[in-house]
Image: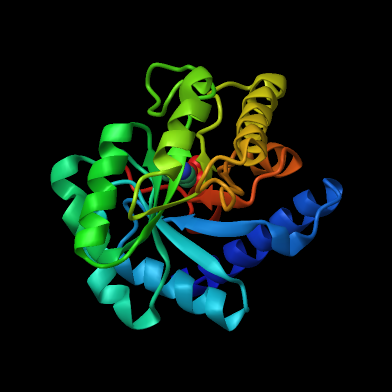
Length: 241
Ligand SMILES: *Cc1c(COP(=O)(O)O)cnc(C)c1O
């Protein structure tokens, strides 16, 4: 099998898996968007995935963890005009590089970063979509604001000029216990619902729940995910660094 055939099979299979998960949750299949997490994947393979997705009419977003990788790949894919999301920690000195390409930053977890991002966006005469990353599992290895501080942070970020608060992102707990993973995703949904219900300025579009990866997308879709971020399910195992 060629790489292209492999990618096509995986993409079709993943799309069906997503549709099945939505159906089982009683949701419209089109209500969950697929973000391809392209970290460590060579740009040719990312291009092939985007072309196959377009051919199959599967709408996809692209996500990179590291701005360095975003900056390295984005120019070579610019003709396809993908919607890039930053999904990893963003350092202040990388904001301008990120804004050159990114439509959204899903990993905002401090007001300081939000304010810097907003002012750089304004300097470029644009706005940037942001999601608040919440560490629902409390695992020390994971970034994100603590769940107890997420509503306060979201309300403040929503008021920052240059930003559009679009929702919330999390990485599921690293455990085989589905109940624990499910509870974390439910927590993110509750945070979003509270922020939406608050009526605070700038919060009315904060509907997105970016949660679910290759190993736990069904659990995330059942809890209301609107974006699932998939790497290995589509690209196969990542090349070992
Ligand atoms: C790598 C990564 C993903 C995708 O992970 P897979 O398990 O390969 O699907 C999703 N979100 C973030 C933030 C990631 O770093």
